[in-house]
Length: 291
Image (cartoon, rainbow, N blue to C red; front, side):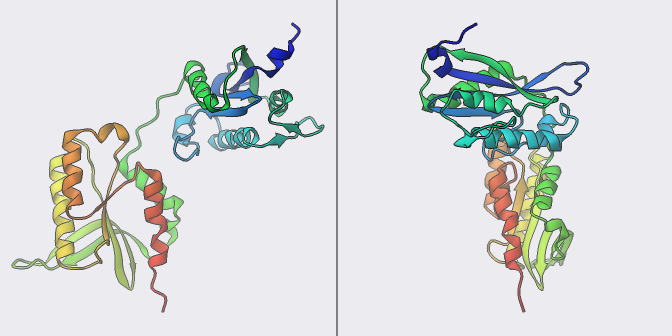
């Protein structure tokens, strides 16, 4: 079929596919790329909305190599965000505004990862509307696998490893704190994590917001934080409760009350908010006392 001038400049979309077994040829749709002379938008399976990073948990049951999958998504993302690219088959640079940009993207196809023509739209699509179109096509064409539930402990360990705290001599696990209680016997508390360099800098406790553990766990944690604060064992911002609170659970009245109680005695860090959690842990090395 001959492509008309209008068709060549119309908004087009490519479907990103992954073929785990080339011999069986059973491709899975893993994303879409939408192109028009006014811009390019893309969405890929596993990308986090907030950071753009690929969540390996989403694709671990799909891809034979999560590392290779991440590399391909990163490559495609870098290509669509470039002002011009060089076709993998060679030749001159192709600007993003040219219809040939679509073919240049496809030229990098490999056996397991490829881009195929999806179709084009006759109506003009303004550049500002391309991300919405990419989202629509993604939801229509890509089936997302069920993501294994991430536990509070697993999320904390992943973030701690990312911040390289697990190799720091100042970062402690299961840290025991002896706390004098006015009018009563001395008590010993165990905190999940601590940062100590000569003096105690931070104390962290994981606090489950699961319904079966909510009431007892919240009150026990609040008691620990309250007594440590009264004894002034750390500074005003020296303690924090680590909770895992995805968006869909924040409207739960029981959870809301629990977080409010914790907030009255300590800082609350929601490790589901990856940026906030990363910033919290990344700041710890700066607390080291240099003698």
